[in-house]
Length: 345
Image (cartoon, rainbow, N blue to C red):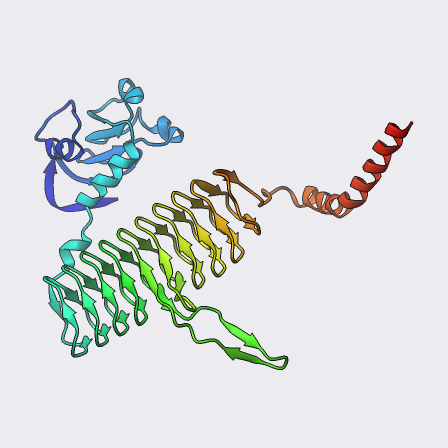
């Protein structure tokens, strides 16, 4: 449940979404909520048919929904072809976070000489900004965050508390970095001499495009030589690992616990489900969707949906299937011999 710091009216809501509505234009709207929990001064939305059952009994001031469900709505309605997108736009109106951003540098922050600060920058308590950093206009550096030397951070970018941006990283405009994420840590590079490991200095950087979001406790490693590059409008969930010299194309999305090994290239408009693993040095073309828990070990050159994870089943069934899996090679060989025998006969 969310609440606005100021009161909006139903007419304001409709105007923001550029849609028509039926109902009292002056009806105060003080927040958003689900169909089931909405109060008479809140807007609800219907974007999933699973919640149609809650529409008939909702007490919301208005409901944002698809036109096909309009006739079943017992309260004022706001009709959109994509009501979930409408909900996303409305959520920005009720987000209290920007109101707490007071421009200025907290006395406990450490800002090195030679840092360039744009207009209305907010640097919160105990943040550290090293020399040569350039911050664009309205950048927010959260409490305890660290920005390494010679980084460039674009306008309207927000670092939540305890974000680490290592040296020489370039971050675009309107980027959101959530707490605990590390951008530009060393990639996993070592050479073995037969007895032990020798570290390979990671000489590249990281480039994040505009409108990127990186979830909490995710890591994007700096390149070994060239840069690791994340395209525009890429959305990265929490606990994602992106190794050195990976490239992610524009508008792709990676769900929680995705792991991508070094030098793999992911195209534009790709979606990787939770727990997906990509081996190194692969190429994934544009428009690929990989479902959760899948392991990709070969390049993908055709758009589409790909899966390898096995859905959950009862333990008894799984144990039987595991035994059959071990027998597949022998069964295939016996079948080939049988087919050959029939052809010869």
